[in-house]
Length: 112
Image (cartoon, rainbow, N blue to C red):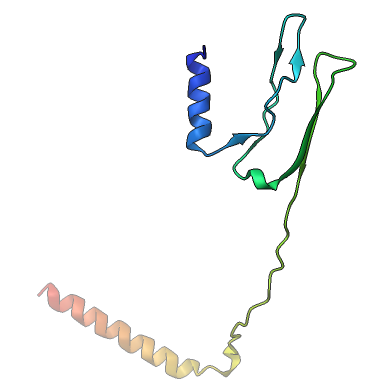
């Protein structure tokens, strides 16, 4: 029978869609074995191989997991590089000043 903590933990794994890779006992006492190693994944297809080797110099088994990683090539994309040295700053400043004056007039008219 599972404790409330165990049930809560299993429910959390379910909600997060996580699967444990190691499913057998990895730590042993004179009476029983328990799984104390947690290797969790949301994509079991990435796991190539996992091994739980017999314990030999301690009560804990050595585990190994081989995972495949894909590296996707990132392609360069076209971008527009603006040459600001060719900008007409005098005219641009006049346009911005005109817009600013217009907005100030609109705001002041609302309060009259």
